[in-house]
Structure formats: C-alpha cells, structure tokens
Image 1 (tube, rainbow, N blue to C red):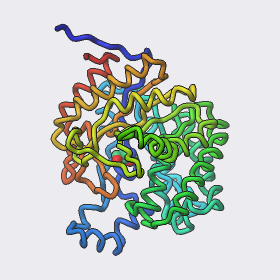
Image 2: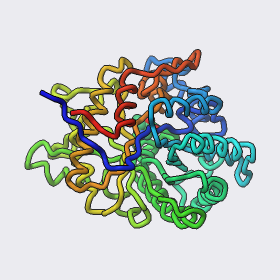
Image 3: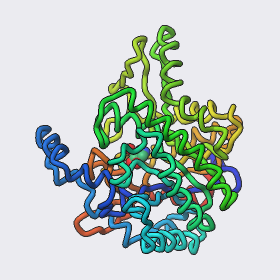
Image 4: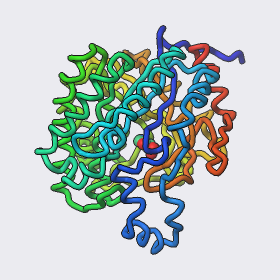
Length: 404
Ligand code: IFM
C-alpha cells in the first residue's frame, strides 16, 4: 500500500529545546550548583549506592562556548525554531548587579540564531535560581516578586528585539512539586504549604512579567505548562481523575491564561488514576522510555483537544524521551506528530513542535545518564553525533509533512 503524506499548516515551526543549566556548564552562581556540591546531596547519593560525581552538572555540554557549532546542527537538521533559556544566576550573580559581559554573551547567542533565520523561544525561568535569591527564600516569599521582575525588565530591555516568543516560566507545577514535596530539586523541603505558596508566587510572577515584556516588544508571551493525560482506570475513578486533572493541569493554567498569548505544551505522557487517586503505571502494556515513563502519543491528542476551549495558539514547547539506544525515538516523534495532526484536523490551533532535546544534557536529579538528545554528546570529548532519529525528524522539518 502506498504511503500517505500528511501536511502541517503553512508556517509551522519545527525545532528543538534546551535549557541553560542543563547544557551550558559552570553555572556556578545558581542554587543547583550549590546543591549539587553540598554534603547533603553527596551523602544522599552515597546512601543510594551512587557516585555523587556523576550528579554534578560540571561543564555539562559546554554549550556556553559551543553554541555556534550547535546552532549549525539546527540548520543541518532543517529546523526553523529553537527554545533555550537565559540564566538569571549568570546575568545577576549578586543581588542588584547585572553582569554586562553575560548580557553581551546572551546577545551574541540570540544573534547567532537570528543570523541563521531561526525563530527564538526564550525562557526566563527554567528551574534554576541565583543562589542569593534562593537564600532569600526564592519563590516561597511573595516579597521576592519584585526581585524577579527586575531581572525580567533587564531581559526585556536587552534582548526583546532578538526574541520571537517569550516563555516566562517553565513548568511551575513541576518546580513546585519537585522542590517542595517530592524532595527531588533543591531545597528538598517537604511541605504542601510551601508548594502552594511557590506555585502561586510563580503565577503572580508570570502575570506581572507579562506587561513588562509586552511594553518592550509586542511578541507573544506564554508559559510552558507540564500537561499530563490523566486516564481513569474505571468509571468509579472518574471523579478522582477530574480532581487530579484540575490540580495537575488546570490550576496554573486558569490563573495565567488571560496573560498568555499562546499556550506552551510540555507533554511527556500519561498516567492512570484509580479511585483513591493513586497514579498507577501499567508497565506491562506500555512501551517505556529509559526512565520508565510510559509512551502514550494518543494522550497528546487529548491534551491538545482539551485546550481548544481557550482559543489560543498552541506550541508544543517540549516532547521527548530518554532513549540511549535511539531505538524508540523515531517512532516516538512520528506517532506524537501523527496525533498532533489529528488534533489540528479537529480544530486545535497547533503552530509548532519543539523536540526535547536538541542534545543529551544534564537531566536534573537523574544526572547525565538519561539520553534525551536528537544529537548524542560524548561528555569527556564533547563530541556531538547526530542520531539516526534526528535525520528522519530533519526530513519532517524540511518537508512540513509526515509520511503515515
Ligand atoms: O529535562 C526536562 C526539562 O528541563 C523540563 N521538562 C522535562 C524534561 C525531561 O525531564
């Protein structure tokens, strides 16, 4: 049977995403750097039988120095969009002092993308904080909001002409839960109250950053939400599923949507919900990533359809998997795009897809072992190798079509 080709809307953006701390290296003034080097973290890892040296970001992918050649890879792979974050801890290493050299560094980075005709999605907060801000309580103190806004103002003033899309905050829900309930991110507190305060402070930060960013440049401003397809295991668990859906997927969105010009969708998969709210992962009947996350492309269609009611453009700001052998990635991308296309046919206004990630990088508390890259990184030599799945993705990017 002849293969059918399906075409994406004209002007669709194709690209990949990264964040600063995960790739740049030597983010020495951040709270993550301090935590990675703390005795608390080292002894925790040792008690789990792990080697703490494998869980420090170090020079990461040395993207800080290699951005030009990494951007050449984008061109080679036919991408026309790229998402990256700028690092507050670099730009403002001490409270109230902005480092002009770092401002110029990021200007050169963004100019390097513009020179290649690549649309830029620039994230302002992607999990990391300047250490001085963390010491002041970070986002658990509402009084700290103006400190974040000073940084936003600087970014808007300096970089606006080079930005096509602002992403104010990456995954506030994950930041809150991982830092203040699950103990996977610094400061590893376990308090529902602090989670609630941090998430609400981030909501306020986004809403107050919006007019600042719009004043300098009328480009779309949005937020990258972590959205999960929650599936009830039976009719009895529907109510629990709806409650969890509200908490996981809607709480932040509903409070920020009026100040979003588009919705950024970070989609990694789905979870089952039982009557008592437990998320059960049925390992046996799912394909799994190297991190044991269930691969569920059809859930992306449901997530996108569910967002139609907000009448905003949708960009998939992250979607990807840990797959060191590059065995599942090609199919993963194909299937997620197939379901994205189905959602578009049913009226979801999806305008772009940014794969997570361009290259292997520092996967937070998991260290370097998960391999999320379209491009493999050999950390000792920093050599980059394009994985086969990247070449088939490049064909999709070039033709704006998917063969099904
Ligand atoms: O690596 C992360 C990224 O920083 C935020 N979204 C999920 C990715 C994979 O876990």
